[in-house]
Length: 164
Image: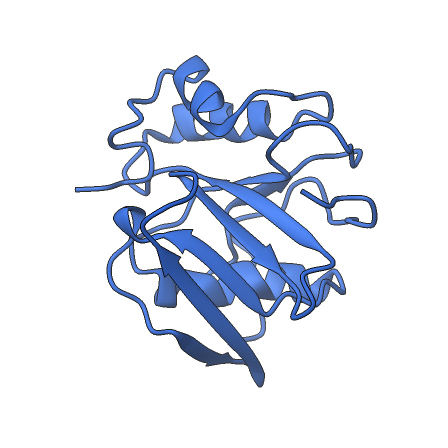
């Protein structure tokens, strides 16, 4: 995790619409930024379709001047997705892997100098629990691993990312 220069609004109104017309991502970032811990943000997508969910998420990051154009994810957490996407004129490469941390996506720039690790909360999670999980994950002094955050929030890890 490289969060030294990560500056993003702590919480965004889910009802706001980005310029692409896609719903604004339901996401909370750690504020203030901290070098400790494993997670930089928590995201509650509306579906398991990564190609549908990414435009809203990436627009939040791009509006905060983050040059994210690579997405790494565990394929067990999502429906099949393309290897590349063009989103609002930005080329984005997606890397789905069988290894790596479940319930987390890693976003980075093309040079991998900046990386943002995002805990993914299942789309079908109860709103109260999802908000609690997002609040816990966004605490500046949070040093819990993703699976610990999900367990502490009372989420079953087998379905925490919405896996069927």
